[in-house]
Length: 153
Image 1 (cartoon, rainbow, N blue to C red):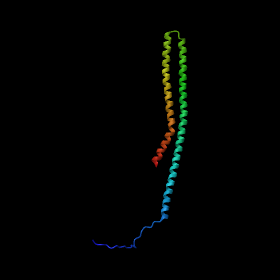
Image 2 (tube, rainbow, N blue to C red):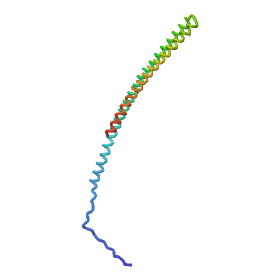
Image 3 (cartoon, rainbow, N blue to C red):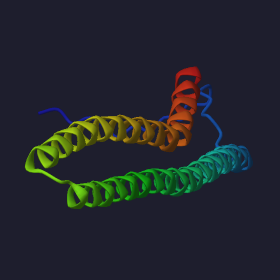
Image 4 (spheres, one colour):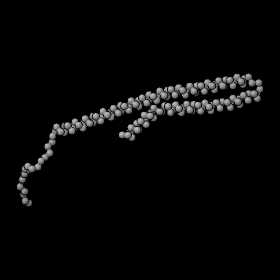
């Protein structure tokens, strides 16, 4: 085997890139500043969205209270009307002179109560539909606004 003598050469014509720590520090600082700014913007957006959602929920709860009271009052009125009609009917039955008159009174009362119950049910249904629409409107508006903003972004 042939022995290769150790050779050391100096290369003088080759340039090596010089690491400048001040430029690296500036670049890191720029990246950090950009990250901080983006974080501030994200926090601001999150804070704004949370506030909007809170206002929508407060509005929804207030609307639920209002419409709940309205529906309750309609139900109470219907119950009161039905109770008064029942007592009036009982008074008429007590005053009846014959069995045929009792049957006639009972038939008329039942027919009238069925019609009244159907009307009360329609009225309550309309009130409840309106209440559910009114209660869901604030949240629906916020949701639609958020969707539009996401599509625009």
